[in-house]
Length: 425
Ligand SMILES: NC(=O)c1ccc[n+]([C@@H]2O[C@H](COP(=O)([O-])OP(=O)(O)OC[C@H]3O[C@@H](n4cnc5c(N)ncnc54)[C@H](O)[C@@H]3O)[C@@H](O)[C@H]2O)c1
Ligand SMILES: [Fe+2]
Image (cartoon, rainbow, N blue to C red; front, side, top):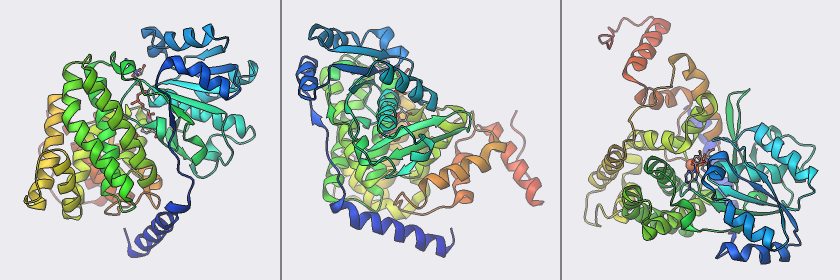
């Protein structure tokens, strides 16, 4: 990236960093048990609520205790259960229509990040009926207080139950974007680790690695506060200690509770200190190929961390200490490499691949432009890259055969005389 753009990005990020103490960050109020929901909704004067969930959750019956408790207490529950993985604009509009048709007064999001973000999108559209989701993308475009929103996460990953972001996909435009504003922080969160017991091992692993990516990207960024550094390191500690346990035994209560806590802490860290290029690259893949968010992050995280090089060795040493992989006497470079290698080892142990086969060479310019547009100038990343420079990360995770095609098309477009390696069979 040229120095003028670098200057612009860093100046933009500095303004946001200086503004942190004056911005209305808040944490959701915690609800201890499902049985407390009717009382909370009563206090909020809400007798009819839209429950936003997805088909998988409903098939598992995870919504039943919530619906039962509320109905028993005279609160009407309207269910929207069609949220897709990577929730779409149409999901939000369909759920909004139900909300309005039944004159709902509040929202309960029950599910992973997709259902929670879908409910946030509905809330934003309720208070901004004349503004499309697309026009609310970016930062500080919602502005108005949402109807009461209670988030009940069933994965331990996104932290959406405490963040100011809603990530929405527009399949027609092949784009996935974040809407970031303070009213999107749910008013209440109910963390009940039992809701996550039914996650199969692979989902446990990929969502857990999403939480790890939040914590690491927040920590290595340049807009941290003491709070966010502490939350990020605590999350990293919990994830290294308990993700393998939760993966090995989904019924391990202590491991599930610790992962729910880790995802929440990582959410608190990144909602103030932002994510980085791993997320920007992953969101572009979600928009174009529908790639699962946690999986894309898990594959990209070690690759991007290696790319940052010595710029993050000291900070990764702190992460390594939190993970129990190093101590204060360890050389920063050695600690950083050990930390990255441990993420790769976790990935292998969880059967997470090291490539993303859906990436096609002809899509690289679009993917890179999308990722660069999301990240620059907003994310206070340790090293700045433009779209062209980001391409190297996608190429590093393409299938061998696709990597070869990409190199070939680059060679043709640059008329390079450099010989290509043998085509993979
Ligand atoms: N708003 C934010 O701050 C934020 C942060 C990170 C990611 N996200 C977004 O969140 C979405 C990803 O969310 P996610 O990773 O939590 O997954 P998800 O909500 O997309 O769910 C993935 C799948 O897991 C299933 N599932 C969920 N809970 C389950 C359970 N307890 N048992 C069995 N199956 C279960 C769902 O039915 C679904 O099929 C992406 O769209 C991503 O961009 C948002
Ligand atoms: Fe994420």
